[in-house]
Length: 104
Image (cartoon, rainbow, N blue to C red; front, side, top):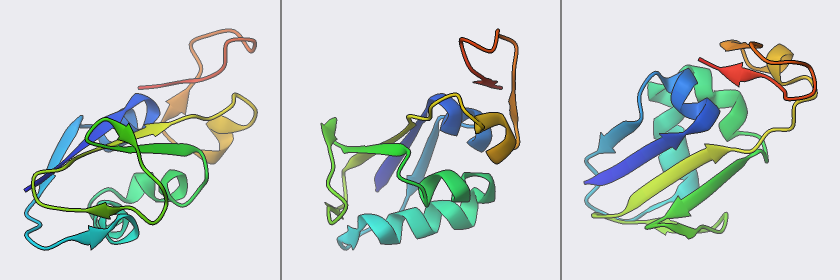
């Protein structure tokens, strides 16, 4: 079992914090992202961008990382405020322009 945790904007778009995948053999990070995009289409744009940090077992992961049974994989969006609300539906501004958008 691989536990995926969504943080910040990704958690809001996925409408969940945790998703578990029954993965018994090691898979690439890209393969895991494909599963996530299939299950959470709203995350596709962010997961395909360079605006997401990925961790495996609480350590930053490289693009060519391998995910295996028992791993916890975290995804956190690190977007700047410019244009974020236009690019990602589900983001609404409750803050001033200076503080940027919030996702809920």
